[in-house]
Length: 597
Image (cartoon, rainbow, N blue to C red; front, side, top):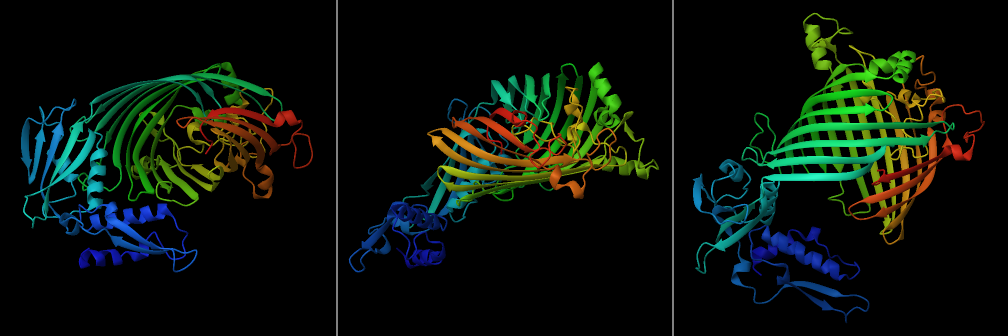
């Protein structure tokens, strides 16, 4: 190997996979070969391959030890021991069925060969090409280019083909040709399913979706989705009461996604990781049998981008939702008559909001035993409109409307962290801590019902059904099957720990401990004991344990959990921390799809 190549390798010795006193491992030897080949290819040595690396081993000098020397194989071809540069660059775009190009166009210094008509704007292809004529070849740049092209979702495949510029012995230039085949522009899907949700509802559903790729010849995706479901919920509360809620839901949504940031100064910037702009319009019809019918419709615009492999930012500068309570039943009216705050949270209103979410996930980059996922978000609703009204001389506190309807005004913070520790290939310890806070002010002191927090259910505290505890020490009327509607709050805190283990092949088991509750920030006469109070905080935490089994089908996980209540925050008539009147009253059985967290 040349002295220049040798110096390149020596500069990276601190990153080597093989170190003194390590256990001898063939896997490590192969890892080091791959590392050295990548180093060389990132320095222009296009023809350098892992099998050009060899090892000389000596086991005689030191018993129990291997003296190892890393060398290059003798007789390497001349093309492998010199760096190469990129020459002419071109695209060859095959048709939907593999039809070969019939025409061509020159864009700047890029030649594009295409079949029929050019179905992608030349600038889109040019901006996602990180090689320029005369550049030193680098494997990392090749991978970056291929990733950028694949994220367009225009092509079924992309292949980068390099050929020497000429046959002379001194040639050090490779012409690059990118071969690609168009993906079909239309895609339809019909999905029939049985779902189990975190709100403890389950039932059959159907989703019909239609996707149009490359709508404006720039990788844009138009998606239209129609979905419907029928759901029911049954369950017992700790106090022995039962409830049964049936509902159906219909929804229609349309999304337009651009594979880039649509904003002045950023439209032509290409990121190393996915970056999208999405516009959405939607309408949802929810009917709760014997309760109410609600129509929610609106739209949003959002930006999503990843500066690194583990970090993701999502900014929603505009989201407008209108909730229309179309009809109610006598049972619903009786509940809201007794609880004015509940009525205010469900009344017809606009929700103009903007939000920011940060997500960290090291699952793709972390090779250790600890996987960390963390997501935090902040949402602000109605504040810009309220500021405009204030500048116009209108009241900041109340009476503000959009098109004759009031709008919500609040600030909301949520954060959730998950840690998964891999004990070994058959055992894991999973932990989750999450919290939320919403504060309404100005135009309304009650947050919209859809924005408030609740707790309990298959993905929460599994000893309790959804909305069966909280806020605080509040205990609803056990004779009212719809009393769960009162059990929402402004503050949420929840913690879970779960030990997961393999039982037989794809059958896994789990033992868990769940804790948490919700609280109010303002006193509510209809929900006494719901206000957050530091003096009673620990006693307000509901606690449950339990065990479950999971059947992992690889593409789907079926889960059955049995929760056992240990402590409920409200008075049950039984003294002591374990205040469950009867053991069977504290049992919760949940059949669900997927892991709880």
